[in-house]
Image (cartoon, rainbow, N blue to C red; front, top):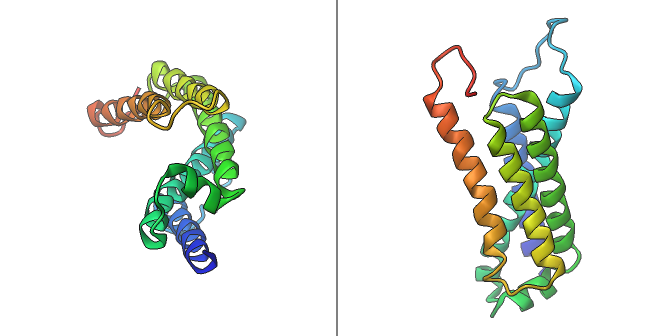
Length: 163
């Protein structure tokens, strides 16, 4: 398991670096006006936390195939503490990003509320030890929020925000 887990962690790290550097072209602004406020910082932190966790969970599917894992409970057992740590990171990231979406007003408010509600639902289902198929409900709610953000972005005119 060690080599596969190392590969997954390395993949998550590099995908995160690429995602963070893409919007800026890999350079930092030297403008004194390039400061961000608390809501923007929270939005970035939430989005990055959610993204790192998402990449990890995408990698767990690859791990399961490579390791020949028989079922979901076995996968969770094989991944050990990394699984709940990334689950916590995903919930915290979704709650923080959802809150900042509501506060910033860049995307429709309902998308931030839906994202946070999906994270809360996922947490409740996990704590209640719901079957894996039931836990899809939390994912579906969070995905609806991201679809809403994407549609708002596609409907916006160039030079204006999505909201």
